[in-house]
Image (cartoon, rainbow, N blue to C red):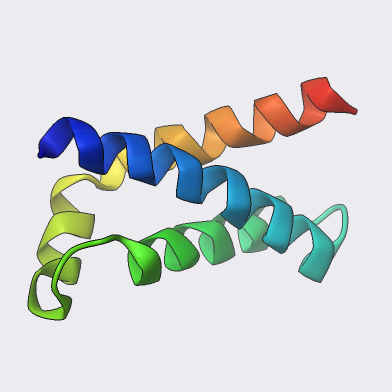
Length: 77
């Protein structure tokens, strides 16, 4: 289950980074990262009462997934 959740977070990170980039444009890295993390937290596929707990437990992984998604997106340009 945890492995599936990590895979889903990586997928969500890619979507979140694209959406943040489209919404905020360039030169707003911290705002885009915050927006991406909030998007992932909102869309984590766990029951609502557990979203906050899961996002806190996996916060480092979520941050890493966002950073990886940014690097992936920049490499695709």
